Structures are given as C-alpha cells and as structure tokens.
Length: 321
Ligand code: AMP
Ligand code: MN
Ligand code: MN
Image 1 (tube, rainbow, N blue to C red):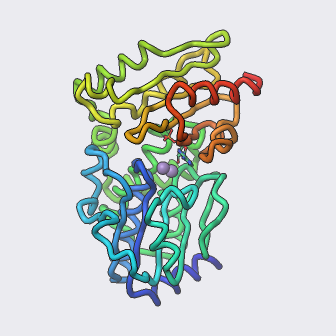
Image 2 (cartoon, rainbow, N blue to C red):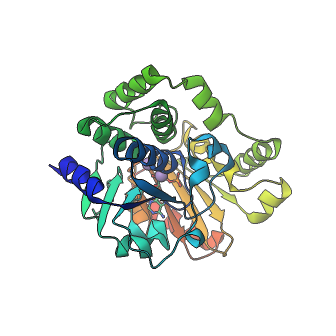
C-alpha cells in the first residue's frame, strides 16, 4: 500500500524537504506546515520547508511558517533523501525547487488537482479531495499518526481556503468530517475565518472595488472579466494580495457563466484566474500551460494583459455558456 511505502521512506530518510507552489495560497502553505509538524512529531526527523515566492502577510499566523526557507537559503547541490510536494499541480509550479526535487533520492507528490500527471515516485493525487490538506489529513489518519493542535490548525487552513469557507462544490461530507475532527482537537473556526478573510487594508478593499467597477460584461453578461495593472496597485498602495476573492465576486453575479481576472505581472506577462459555473476552465487554462480544477483554474501567459484577454475570450467563446 502506498501509505506504508510513504511511512517506510520517511523512516529511512535523514533529510526531508517539503515544497509549496509559487504564489502560495492557504492550502499549499497549510499542507506544507502541517506535513512538517506531522513528520517532526511522529518521526522526529529534520525537515526543511521551501517557499518559492513571498508568503502573503495574512498567512503569517500559520504555525511554524516562520521556519520556511527560500531557494537562496538552501544549498542547490544538496541531495535530500526525500522531497515532498504539496498542492503542486505541475512540476514547473515549484520553479527552481525542481533542481532539489530532481536530485532527491525519493519524491512524493501530494495533491488534489485532476490535471496532476503523477510526476512523483509516490503519488497521492485525489482529484475529488477538497484540498491537498484533506489528502495530508487522510494520509495521517490511515497511518495512525499523532495529530496535535498546531497540525490541525495548519490543515484546517487548507480546507477552509480551498473550499471558499466550505461553500464551493468541492465541499464534501469527508471534508466537513475532517474539519469537525480538527475543531474537536481545538481549532477555533471563527479565529481561522478572521485570520484568513478579515484581512483587507483600506487600500486593498478600495482597489478591489475599483477592479469590480471597471469589470467588462460580454455575451449577455455571461462572460465577465476585469484587469489588474501594476499602476492600480500603486495607486491604492497595495500588493497582489488585494485580488484574493476578486474573481469569486465576479462569478457570484447571477448572469455569469465564466469569470476571469487578468493581472499584469512584474515581468510584463499576465496571470489569469478563471472561475466558471459550467464550462471546464481547467481545459481552457491547460491550452496556455496552466491548469487547476473544472470550475477554478489559472495560467500564466507571456504576453501583455490586452493580448491575454483577447486569446482567453477567443477560447471561452468556443464553449456553450
Ligand atoms: P487561482 O486563480 O490562482 O486561485 O487558481 C485557481 C486554481 O487553478 C488553483 O487550484 C490553482 O492551483 C490552479 N492554477 C492556477 N494557476 C495555475 C497554473 N499556472 N498552472 C496550473 N494550475 C494553476
Ligand atoms: Mn493551491
Ligand atoms: Mn489546493
């Protein structure tokens, strides 16, 4: 059984590295810190955690997140006994972390994206799981690992944020049962909600309102999108964190079938966040090298925002809305 193999590999490993994906969200960070504490508590092993871009301010409350390292803190020639990726849909989402992944003796891929091809030596990819955190928790339970409040807190963050507060269509009975178990361990749902959602500064709230205000409605309002430029964020003195929840606000409009946000990136490229009620947007994002889930997906394009919007609209319109 794969869980037994995982336990054997952890037992035989001296040095372990856990890696989260670029532009980290609550699930990848919660799963990483949760896995870190699970390994520490149950195996007393040395572990490193790697973040390949900035940790958003609001996730600084996650237990042990202060211990994360960045690629420049690590020796890139090092051969870890075991590298574990969490919530990493495709290997290019760990950027230079791939160098360490490729050198490792053993690799494990823990994820819940249907587009994940199973690039690890051991793959725990559950397309029906709400989050990578749910997969980590399931592995912990099957293995009989001890779970303390820090671990439950980390993994609850993954469940909460990837289900949009237990509202999206990935909210299953299993996900809620696990959340209930975590609450029994001592997790306080209202504290978690405040830490994850009531985090907007005035500038962030106003910038989000501005981006909703300039949204473009097309095809009987079935397609709605907005753009985010560097100059918008400068004007409101905010960073990219303001945009969390923006695309969900556009999907929440009754007429919407497909919603997306096109965000200008520092290097001139464009990041697309797409949501839908019917169309498979993972497929659309897949055409541009991205992926995700049927109703929530993303991709990063090398062209500017205007060209990206044009290409994305062209693909969306091939589908029945
Ligand atoms: P986001 O719009 O960034 O919240 O992402 C929505 C979903 O799509 C998440 O499950 C992401 O993991 C996934 N996703 C976003 N960008 C990419 C990408 N470039 N490649 C693969 N999956 C992505
Ligand atoms: Mn994620
Ligand atoms: Mn996830």
